Every structure is written in C-alpha cells, then in structure tokens.
Amino acid sequence: MRLIILSNLKDRFPANVRVTLMLTVMMFILSSLMGDLLPLIQIRQAYSRLGLENAVAITADSDIKSVVEDLGGKYLGVNFRGKYTYDSFAYLQPVEADYFENLNYSFKKQTSFEVVDGYPAVVVSSLGSYYSLGETYTEILSGKDKTEVTFTVVGILKNDFVYLTPSEDSPSSVVSKQSNYIFLITDEDDGIFTKKDVYGALASGDITDFCSNIVRTGLVESAVSTADRFAEYCALELEIMGMTVMLAIISVLLCLAGVISNSILSRTVFAEKYRIICTCGASPAQCRTIQIITDLIPIIAAVAFFVVINALRNL
Image (cartoon, rainbow, N blue to C red; front, side):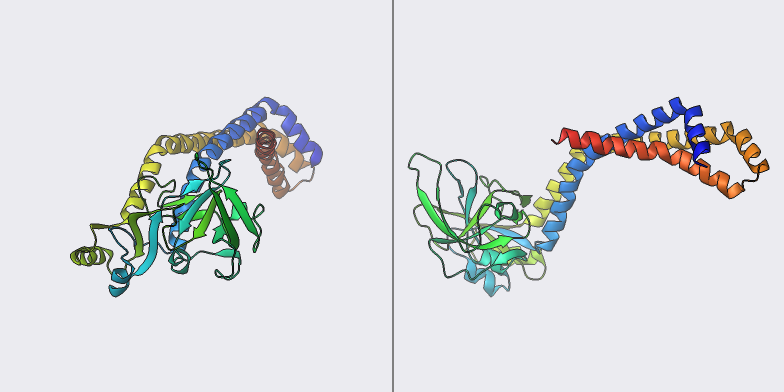
C-alpha cells in the first residue's frame, strides 16, 4: 500500500504541490482574520462573565452610592484618573473596593484587602510574574514631580480582561484586555489620584427604567447603559473586519473547490491503476483507503508548512 501511495504522489506531484501551496495561503489568510476576530469574541465573553449586561455610567457631582442602592442597584465606584509609571511599564488605576465586590472577577490568588502597606492592589494576570501576592512595592509615577506610590499586592486576576466605566480619558473601553493594569483600592481623593464625575453601577430590573428613575432623583446629570455602547463597539469592529471576513470566506470556498477538483481528477487518473490492483487481489476498501491517504497528504503538508512558517515568524 505504501508503494502505491508513493507512486500516486509521484504521478501527480505538480498538482499536489499546488494544492499544498493553496491551502497554506488560505490558512495564513484565516489566521490573519482570527487575529482580529478572536479578541473580539474573547471580549464579548468577558463582558458576559463579569456580569455587565446591566452596567450603567452615571454622571454626577457627588457620591451617588446611596442613591444607587436605594433603587436596588449595585454601586461599582467612581472613575479615577489613572497614571503610568515613570518607565511606562504599568498603569496604576485607582478603583473603589466595590469594583471587585460587585463584579464577577476571577482571582488566581487573593488575600484580605485590609492588611497592607500603602494601597491594597490587584494586578492583572500578565503582571503576576512581576508582582507577587502579599509583597509590597514602590513605583515612581510619570510626570515632573516623580511621585512615589507604595502598594501591597492583595490579589492576582486569572486573566487580563478588565472593565472601567467609560469616560473621555480612560485607556480602557467598556471591556478590554490590558496586560499592564495595577488596580489600587482607594475610596478618597488623596492628592496623587483624583476622582472624576463619572460613576459605575449595575442596574436592577429594566435598565431603561433604572436610568430614568435615577435621573428623576435630581442628584445626577445623566445615566446611560454601557451595554448600548458595547454593542456599538462590537458592531463597528465587525464592520471594519467585514471585507476581511468576505475575503476569508472566498478563500475557503476557492480552496475547497480546488481540493475537491484535485481529488476527482486524481481518482480519474488512477482509475486504471485501481482496476489492476483489484485484479491482483486488493479489495475496493483498500483502494478507497489508498485514495483517501493520497488526498490527505497535501493537506497534512500544508498544515505542517503553516505551523513551521508561523513559528519562524514568531521567533
């Protein structure tokens, strides 16, 4: 059987090379697409996992925690102005304790938020190898004054997907993947980090009614669902990737047509050879197995080429 397969590959060597190259190109096109599409899928999954379907951004001049709780919602905290470290390695983002208490964050490691030196801090998963749980660190902030900030790591997240209430200067979108975030837990302005006027909350019941009711209190300027903003973000990303998706679909269809055509022609060319083999005692099932293996080898070769070239590119 092995000799017959080798004979088949030799007889149609140019055609098999073309199929291999065609499939390799197709896989690079698909990998390029998935490089954009997979993060979007992961962000949507993180949005759901964090329980943000009823998230609301509220603009107000003063603390609205009690107002949110009176309406049955969950307070997430005010938006602080974060700052980069002097070497731009990490982004220090203050949040109130409610930020972790009311969102479904998964922790890789966690201790008490209370026994600390400096700020209690939670780091994203990517920083878990740089900042150890329970250890205290001092970082210098960017800016002319080179302010030092001391914090103790009390938690390491399982992943890098985080949520910040949307605002103009926030580096994060509604949900984003951030590999350099250090969350400092603080409830007050302290001269280093200042609060803004945008608060986060989780609505209770119908989100439209919740937004209307909280505005009616007269204590807030506006309340909007971040779910709408998130849907717009996803729609825009898909629209931007629309042409790439179409090219990928066309590429897949053309490659399938090429593979099927190659297989049909191969069977036609080898029909006489299979008749001779059957006359010599081979069964029809053995002939089919030989043909299937013959057709699979260019596909396997294309996958191998793709893996090797992709690995070399990433070195």
